[in-house]
Image 1: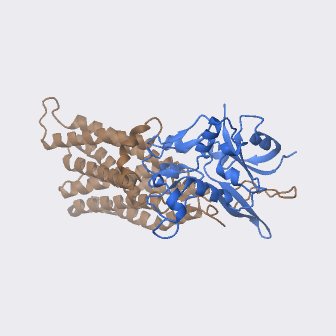
Image 2 (image 1 turned 30 degrees about the horizontal axis):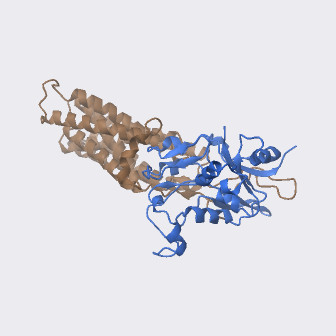
Image 3 (image 1 turned 90 degrees about the vertical axis):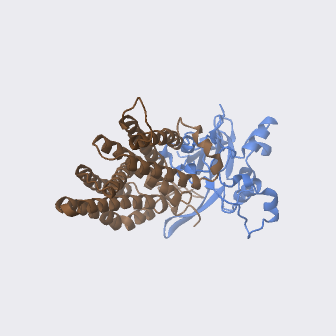
Length: 298
Length: 217
């Protein structure tokens, strides 16, 4: 049998594209958590800085992925329908506002009209949410790939983005010697929610008849994803609450584990599970006699 | 209105791949890239097994997902239904290749040759470096179609206005023409036979029809 008679792994997007989803999801949600933390009186500058760096690194990696990188400006030509164009458009004010709010927080800028970075940080968070949504739509609009076109992938990758961002946020706070118990509780809830949505996503893929190779790739990462990315951080958060002397350390480790779990998910989704289904023919041709089995496939 | 479509008669196709070769020769596509590909498939369960040859490629959908997803505007839909790519605008993001339910788009980053590092005589003449790093696909030989129309010819009837794969088909399995013209060859063929389009549940409304039987009573 020839090409098309079996499902095949897409070869157009590789680890560089996965890094865009990792950087974009982690960075944009880190900016959101940083803004929420700012409202609660937590440090902002470091988280905002890393949020910018994550998003920028992701976009740089996907820029390296394009076949004609020096035409990158053409990316902005179709905002009417393309979520990739919209992502690029949102990135520009996202960087600007995040930088302004971070510099205001650090006291580098001395404005006369804005007494604090709260307002630009709030808009940064809104833009971060928009950026994350654009990424989810980019992924979900790949109709040729069952693993990506399944609607639950948006909830899964979106939740994962929030989880990764909060995980890195807890790590940064821990490095600064700060404990944020409420944020730890939110991370625990996010980790549980991501595990639940993962199960729903896998079940939906199975019902939709996704290629066996896709199910195998996702099945191969299942234990590592659930144990290292969910059970471990959940346990560490519980330990952080119950072991006061180690709260900072455990919350940082929980954050790292939760983030790594999400990054693993994205790498597998992009580079391992994105199979193009085999070609099917609804009815084989009738040659020389008037009978034909129906619904056959290769 | 005019809506150009392709019709492949699965009863006639013998899998000779002449259309594939004609397309490659005319368009100078790199190794591994076949805008007109013929799938060689086995269907059924032993002992009732059939071998089926299915010409595929861009389906030139009426509602093409590759059009909306393209961020650069390189992918365009003409009034006659033909989907084209402007290789001078495409940035090579490959998102169109991932969204095509038919896997009809290709992207090759670097220049490769069929045999080693040096081009064959044919590749020296026909290779298209403009295809490197951008998405490519079948365009229904739009240059031939347009030139033929400009010369007063009829696509699907006159060879000089008809895609090369159709002209090259030795079994008469492939037909091209305007489905909005009730007198066209494709309209008559589809009227008289049982046919389907691939993945119709996707809602893309392909402009590529497959005949599988005589007209059902």
